[in-house]
Image (cartoon, rainbow, N blue to C red; front, side, top):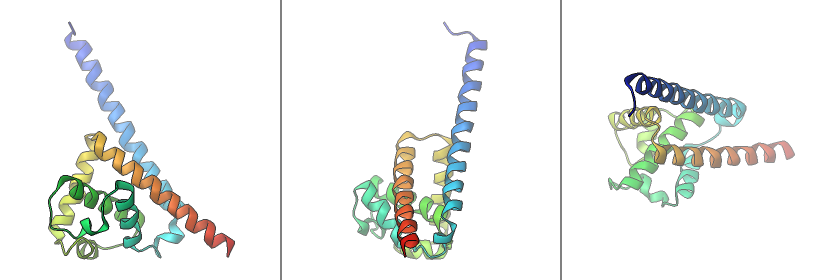
Length: 149
C-alpha cells in the first residue's frame, strides 16, 4: 500500500515533470519561430493549414465545414496553434479562414490549446508535435530554396 508521503512525492514528481514538458515545448516553439522569423511575415496561414490537414490526413475543406466532428475540431484547433506560433495573423482573419467563426470561438480554441498542453493530453500533443515537425520541415525547405536563389 502506498503511504501518504509516497503519494505526495509521486504527485510532486508528476507536477515537476508536467512543468518541464510545458516549458520544453514552449521553448522549442519559440526557438523554431525565432529561427524562421524572416519567413514568418511572408507566410500565409493557408500554407500552414494545408500542412496541418495533410499531416492529420483530413480534407482541407474541414477547416470551413460546420461539422463538430472530433477530428475536424482537433484539426482546426491545431491549425490555430500553428498559425499563432508561426504567423502574425489576427484573430478576425483566423476566424474568417475557419469558416467565418467569431472572435469568441477562436479565443475558446486558444484556451483549449493551453488547457490541453497543461493537461499533457497525449493525442493532442502527438498531433501538435507532428504538425509542428511538418511545418518546420516546410520552413526549412523554403529557407533552403531562398538561400539557393
